[in-house]
Image 1 (tube, rainbow, N blue to C red):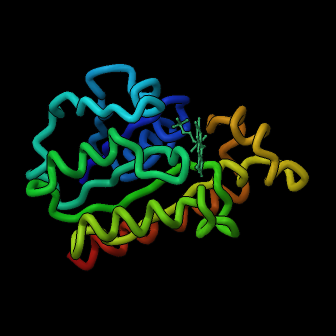
Image 2: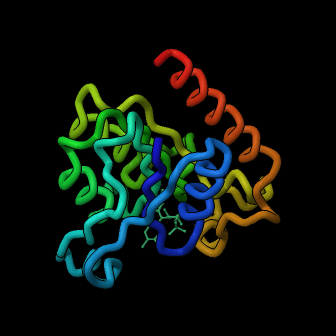
Length: 179
Ligand SMILES: Cc1cc2nc3c(=O)[nH]c(=O)nc-3n(C[C@H](O)[C@H](O)[C@H](O)COP(=O)(O)O)c2cc1C
């Protein structure tokens, strides 16, 4: 098992590192050739640098990255395209802004999940969201300004998100045991 991640502001990196620590597995960052965010806004995608690890050697890839504008972002899409034949099975996770209640709206992570499932037919085992609102107080869960400024760290990774994380790890351990 390997965790592959892209993160601009650190939350998906934090999540990826936490998963790899918990599962005692490798992790590797997806590194685009150029400043991805600017290019994304200009709708230009130049691809990603080759990974150091051989993806083919891993039974499962856990892919982690943010959602921007309701889209599967270019570095994640490039990873899936470039390593399609090498990926045996994939679990997609995201620390995103959209709540579970709004997952099927225009900017919701649900649309991204559907896309990952459709471009990896039979290979995507499941998708899991970790909305940043899980670490915010109730009166700020829907506050766009608050969630854009909030990033996962050791201080705020507790309560609801910790519980969701533990369930996620148990689910992966069950899948591992079945193999
Ligand atoms: C330009 C921009 C657009 C975003 N659009 C969405 C969106 O459409 N849906 C969503 O769920 N989150 C959206 N977000 C929130 C990010 O997914 C969220 O902040 C994520 O945790 C950032 O991950 P990172 O810290 O690993 O970069 C957006 C963030 C930015 C900066």
